[in-house]
Figure (cartoon, rainbow, N blue to C red):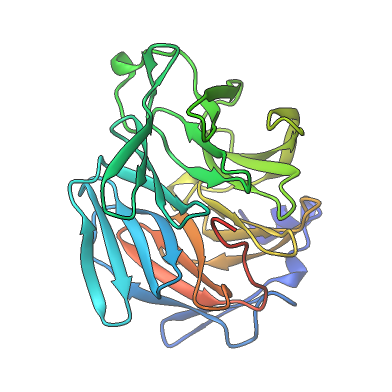
Amino acid sequence: MALQQLKACGLLISLLMVQQSSGNTYATIPAITDSNAKVEKLSDGFKFTEGPVWNPSGFLLFSDIPADTIYKWAPNGISVFRRPAGNPNGNTFEQQGRLITAQHNRQLTRTEKNGKITILAERYQGKRLNSPNDVAVKSDGSIYFTDPSYGIQKEQEELGFYGIYRWKPDGTLTLLNKEMVRPNGIAFSPDETKLYVSDSEKLHIRVFDVQSDGTLANSKVFAELPGPTDKGVPDGMKVDVKGNVYCSGSGGVWIFSPTGQLLGKIPVPQSVTNLAWGNKDYKTLYITAGNSIYRIRLNIAGVKPGR
């Protein structure tokens, strides 16, 4: 979107300052990035990267959906964490440190400490899920996930809608919402009173109030993310400890205040798919985009998975 258009929308793009230097992308967003913060490519040559999540032991896991693989990135190199992996997409950790994965083979799974794979959900009211996409864990152990149809053909759909679900530790699967066009990325506010869900077709983020019983209410548009879709769409999201929302979008990572005000954008060379906080202080933002993985240092820590 042209600079003039953004100004016309009243967005605070004056907070965003971008430089190109020696092939690196630098982004300065007051209070969030320093003047020398840069987007650094860590590795490339994959098919389609998604679902990054930081393991406190010091490495990053991320998905390659068409390669049917979860990879492990560490400072000493790349290795295969699991293959086959059910065409994995979003990943996160729950309170006991077990990996939760949304898979395009139409399953939500948990990786046990001994490596065994437990299927948590694959059907709703007897019908197969579409294609679990992204996932967030609440502090009570409930798992919230989105289920669009990006991993299957139209004729394979059984449900007739694209939902947001909650899986409870007792095994109960509840449909929370089926009104979004293509629900995708999902994240809680730091206090878990809000749930953010991106809609990749409508090019916006919706926000829901999380009720005391875990259900959702008062859906409304939180932020619009316009722009050429070949440069990215609203997809993966994460939230920092101040409540700022980071979402993939056209041209890079879009950052919004807790009230939905655009603070700025971190340009990324490829279309961003998802994000993860990492390193010991959780102030490094890891980014999956295209066939690569990137990272950038920030000033505010992110909310840890499985807190």
